[in-house]
Image (cartoon, rainbow, N blue to C red; front, side):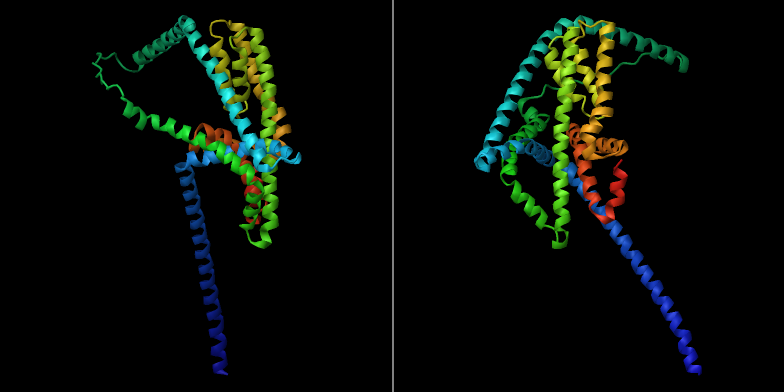
Length: 372
């Protein structure tokens, strides 16, 4: 009996110790998994920053491929091989891009040529602002501290940059952009030609039991990107038509050129309204009075408010289903990582991330946080 009692007293102690050891083991595994996830996220963000030219070029090519895919599909229906249809679509894209570049370049040069005529008004306006700011600074300085004797300001003379410095220094960014743009037509062509193969290969990367979910996820992302592109194009054309009409009535020079820029730039969420005001105000600086300036402000602000609160949710928002906080954080983050292109790619990226999270059980909470 004494032996049995000893055994019964030892067994609960051993089971409690084993349970404690198992709990510690599970906690260490969870901590290790969390650390691995953090390291992986940091590594991905670091690569996204270091390889921004490559990634932005590839993502821009993906968007262009989605734009041209209906044309290639239509040509395929009339018995034109997909490779030939993709070549036709890419050639049309290049010709259209060169035509737009030529058009905008010529009008930008004309606008720059006419700009000196407005220099007197620009100088007077800037002079008034500078005088007011100088008075404010002097009055503030007199209140905060007694006047000090003026000190000599050291002048640093920099040599003029030579050709080698321009190519290897500041010019390197321009060379990188031109090189990246030259790859876009080839990437678009191969994406259009190998579209079906790429989709099947992407689905086969997953285990067999998850391939159906992967197929649905890829399909929903494709549908979302198409809706995003078509919706932005339609809304941009509407904004452009209204802007061109108002600017023409106000007599703004190059109203057709300025209206196109202002109409499409206004599509950038939150920040676009400030950028859309610059072209009409700069072009009409010599012809706009106070009333006309107010009309420009009301037109641009009104278009932006109506676009983002009425048309955008109905045309684009149904496919994205993102809340404003998630969109704002995405714009801030990707603009910091990729600059201007980050503002253009942030919304489809966070939309794709939400779709992926919605199809993964462990990430559905994050997907719900991104949603409306």
